[in-house]
Image (cartoon, rainbow, N blue to C red; front, side, top):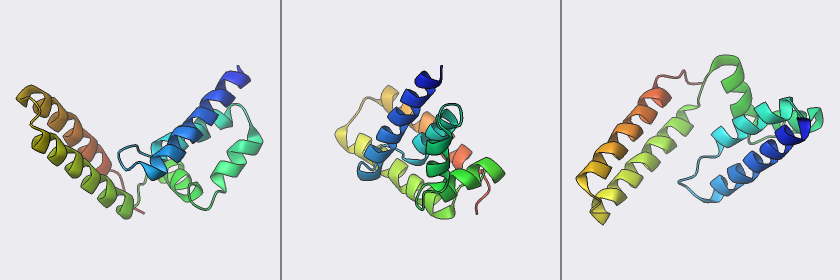
Length: 117
């Protein structure tokens, strides 16, 4: 089972790294999931991820306080607004826009109700 957790952790790291360059793919949730997977498979990789200068603080703050940085909240809000604006410009069907608006609103509510650090 450790191999499965390790592969899932590495896959999450890969997706998170892709998210660094693609603005619509989130990075931190994949790193959180990778930390979860590595905690069950590789102490070395788990320690590396928690002490990483870029990803470690966000993971630690989420684990200890359930907190999301104010900067991350603002960036996520701008990204979500841009995605919805693009959907409007592309002229997607009203039902798709309604579903998208509902889901994105739930994401924003969840995000903004988390404490900031």
